[in-house]
Amino acid sequence: MPSASCPECDSRVFVDANTAMGDTLVCEDCETELELVGLDPFELDPAQPPDPEVRDGFNIFEEDE
Image 1 (tube, rainbow, N blue to C red):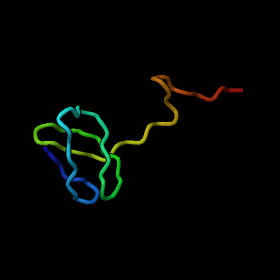
Image 2 (cartoon, rainbow, N blue to C red):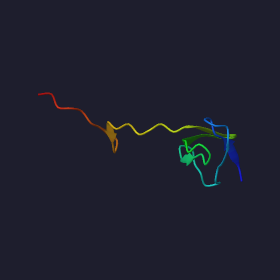
Image 3 (cartoon, one colour):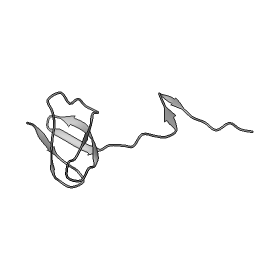
Image 4 (cartoon, rainbow, N blue to C red):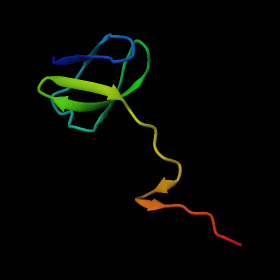
């Protein structure tokens, strides 16, 4: 099975053949959420946490009083 190195702990993370660019994986050793950012060779980056100010493609703004 193909694999890539975890950028946080350098452990081997196995990448399933059905995994696509942008999919999120979890390192079994350090439990870091990782995003697949490269396919040839496989490359992983720490996944960016979702922005709490964006929901379903819409920005949330405070109303001015």
